[in-house]
Length: 135
Image 1 (cartoon, rainbow, N blue to C red):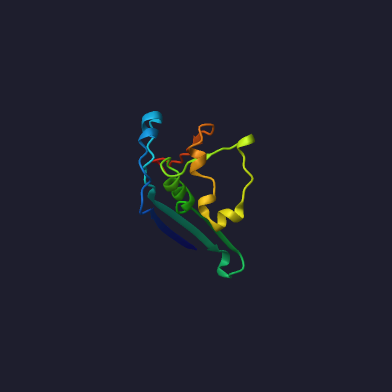
Image 2: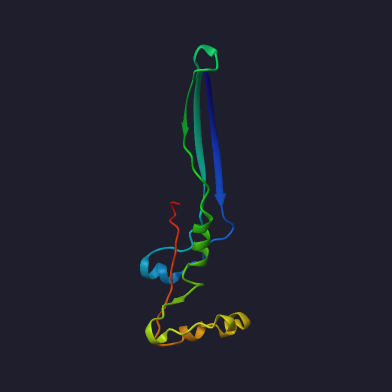
């Protein structure tokens, strides 16, 4: 009979924290500047029994707690989409322009952007993604 016991530790942290968005705290009572990271302990155990010690009939049972590091997408999304950096506009009907991608590539200043944000007929939308302090 053979018993194997092990433990794995995973520590994940990120260098930067998201920006604090005062409006979100004031209006929703939520904090946008929660930095993610954590330490996971992952125990494992395996029991092996070679019946009659002939290496022909073997029973193996094992299990453990298996985790993974934080998904990088959640952190990047939290860093970039905290309501202080990226604003979107949703354009419908007559406000939709025919895109001129060749012009945008040749001169990025011709791409729609600030002019849409300054248009009183279009409301900008800020998307806010946050991570829970429990993450």
